[in-house]
Length: 92
Image (cartoon, rainbow, N blue to C red):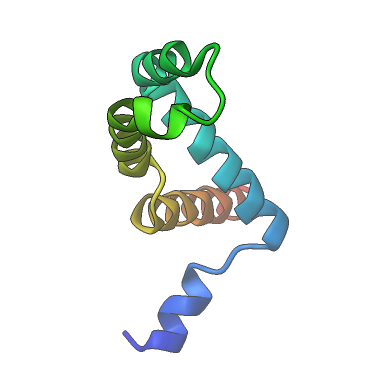
């Protein structure tokens, strides 16, 4: 399959992509809730020192979030959306 063919198959409207990104971020935050809480607890009451004091918690949180928010996940979500739209079209 050529690059253009693949690009057409995975193309979604900008609003749909934004909605999918938002959904992806919400899922990531839900999955990484424990680490979010740890980072928030560490950061509570701090200003500048949060950068070096909470470095470990921030790194753990970022690693977790990256597992659920990356280009591969977004592409899978786009494919699922496109498949769902195709099935709706076929059922009409």
